[in-house]
Image (tube, rainbow, N blue to C red; front, side, top):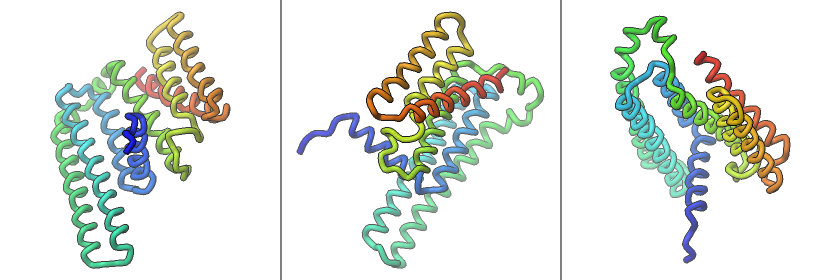
Length: 230
């Protein structure tokens, strides 16, 4: 048996995750909630330990939802027609997701409650660390691109299609450089981002309008994040 490359292994894993996002409404809700929680955590300036706890909890919810979906697919494969035991298995898996989600709510309450009690205008004016802002902006761009591609119904969502994810991320980083630097660094950032887009077109992976759309989405989302920070 031929050994698969690391790229193929990662590609298969991403395809599995995208299938869950595409087919499971609850997973899309979890993703949106996770993004909003991380944004709120960045705005409030949570400690590294608190951020770690939140990330682990959010990741646990995602993992349990993925496992739940995998179990549902296995049950559907083994028992295409209705069977009481198949229903019990699905209910148990769904119960695991519910317990994890309720646990996440409890963790979120314990982490955020003191910040909400002290919440006032000074908190709103509190500076968000730039590195947090860049990470959240890029992560949001990636989730938006995955969401758009998942809704398209294409099987191969990591290669080609509208919009170009590589270009979106490249222009997101270029926009972050523009908002935090001056001079030639800004020019170099956008030049490199443009080269990424050009390589996608030259490699016949994307059409030029898919690259333009990716550049627009990446730049706009990142610019809005820095605009809100100002």
